[in-house]
Image (cartoon, rainbow, N blue to C red; front, side, top):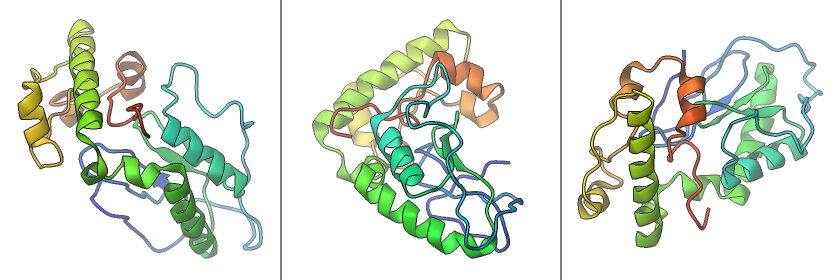
Length: 197
């Protein structure tokens, strides 16, 4: 089960970490049970640096920089079809080192800025609007329910509020077969390709 929240969620015990891109508000960490490396070991990247994204997934620049940074720090982190990243299972005593790498990479890659709508310029918001309109058209073409986009001014007015427009809504409320749909119509706030990020 994937949980989304407005802040980092921490749980006790062992597990992998998952950082999710903007669905509605912010970055999330989801813990799952697992892990078998010793406390001194840090999970290492299984895939090469040139093979960061699965075939058909949008190569969002911020996500790519974040992935490279985490892998350079020795963590096995992969992109997720739900717009974030997943990490390999780890022991509980590794979470502090992971959290430190995550914080450093989130800042240096631009992940924090991209996922903080309050830092977006008017031009970036307008570019996102165009991407949301295109996503709406794509969802409609493949038979996925998508709310009609508002006007540009209404989109700007609703941006960074609880009433922000997302082309993936209301489909996302009861989403099924996420990889198949996302491969065809990537939600713009899951795979941020807006200039400047």
